[in-house]
Amino acid sequence: MATPVHWKLVIDAHDPHAQADFWAAALHYEVEDNSALIEQLLDQGVVSPEILTEHHGRRAWRDAAAIRHPDDPYDPHSGTGLGRRVLFNRVPLAEKKTTKNRVHIDLHPPRGERDAEV
Image 1 (cartoon, one colour):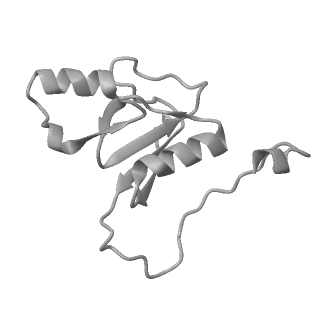
Image 2 (cartoon, one colour):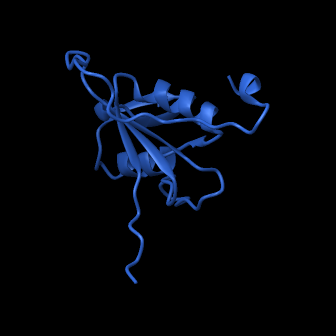
């Protein structure tokens, strides 16, 4: 039997951090914190500050944000989830959407809790 393939859902977004915050709240996931890895890479001169932003008071990748399931394992060194994840990648505002979304997420809260979730 083949080993299952690790995957993540990747979504293009104009504001990846706003999308990560929204979907983390909607799914009860956690926004990944990559700041420890970012600080290490900055100290080593591997990355430059131009590719970073500040989000929730910590350094983050400017063009990407991710959320992970709170019960799944993650790498404490990088903050990267090792299980169920959704990654949001920045696309330029000039990249106008011309057709309907081909991927969407259906949410199914427990019976009787829809209004509370909304």
